[in-house]
Length: 151
Image (tube, rainbow, N blue to C red; front, side):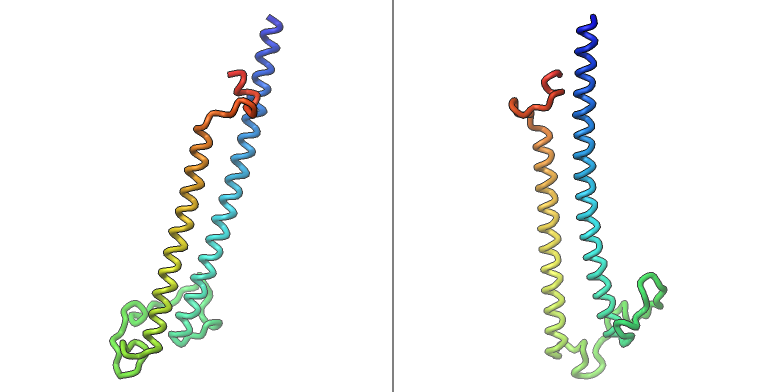
């Protein structure tokens, strides 16, 4: 009976140790993912901030003098709806080469952003699939954790 109880205690100790190792590894993975999300969000926020500054500059409010994020900015209809060009040579004029180049640059930047986002999404899905496959794989006999040998 003593031998049996001793064996059970050893199993419990090994299982608890392996569970603790798994918990710590999961915490590390979560921390890494959260840091990556934080970096991605910070980059996106910076990009949006630059976009807003350039938009404020185009509206004549100035980049640095633009209202800080989080403050109320009155919404004007002309910002929401594109206006038809009133005279030849204006920025909205389809014949204006500078406006055309600006639109083309913006479209290219958006296209590159979509490609980058898709690549990041694919990498994330790939990593998730690899982790799922690794969890489904049985442990190799030479490297099996102690608790796997008991159960």
